Image (cartoon, rainbow, N blue to C red; front, side, top):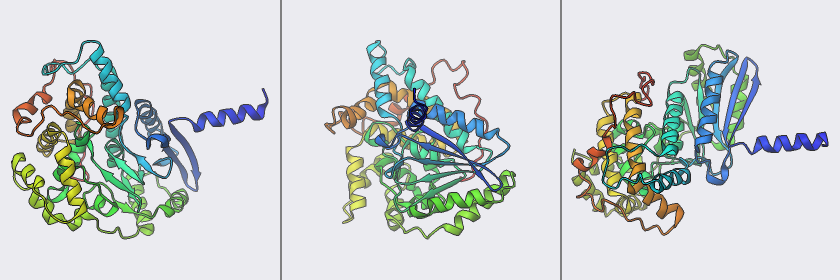
Length: 401
């Protein structure tokens, strides 16, 4: 075979990889650049992508000559729009075909090989990012939703730009803000986290920083300049000093982030979500009559969303408020498997992505049916004497609590 063609084929194969890895030599150390490379699906995180990224992060963590990690997404539209819902749907249907669709039997959510592998890998990856021993910058451009926020949330430096749009839209597919969303949103100021979980309301860069989901606002045009500055930086290879140096570097390029609707309606959001009764909060959201598109869209999304997802999001934030991140991940793991073993998650994906009729048939159909007692079943741990699949996650520090 022609050597030139062979090299070209090898380069094409490398570019087709679901995650691209590059090590760039700087003045005082190397930077590892990881690029989610599935722009056709808005860089939706698949099991393969999660495994590849987790393995590379482990490798880079042990490399004494690598100063920091830069995580980004390919294409102009998204860093990562969430997890691979098509893959999860196939796993749910395969479980059903094997006679393991449980209906109202919540005894054991296991048996979905793909979901078990996906959630364990994703939670481990996200926890690794939260506890990474080196500076890790995530450039959250464009759409950053669901599993994308899970990846971005734990980075030591979280950058948003004028194109960023963050959201937790899980209520529209019968899930809840997972991969640590319960922990993150429970710590958002002025009850904003509960509002975001119940309504899927989108955030711009300023609102993302306000909700403690991002740290720095840089224009998209400054991305190459920021990377060049990182390559030129005099890294000390002391983690604390280098994180501080990266903060100074980003602040030198940052611009003020315009306030978004979450900040503009902060008092209204706090009033809507006041108290400890989900039923009362729901009634207030359903009664929103403000002449504001963001609030009205939030009301409509809540009204059309899964009542069970609203209840689970509410109950999980209550529990996560007093848990470490590691314990939250362990809690969410079983809730996620229960969601994959019962109707609403599959039904939500069906309505949105498979049949695309956008007419999900939720069960329970109303919040009155989705009681706290109903939600208790999702927290059931099968065979509790066996070690948890995430038992080895250590006690988490909570730098953004």
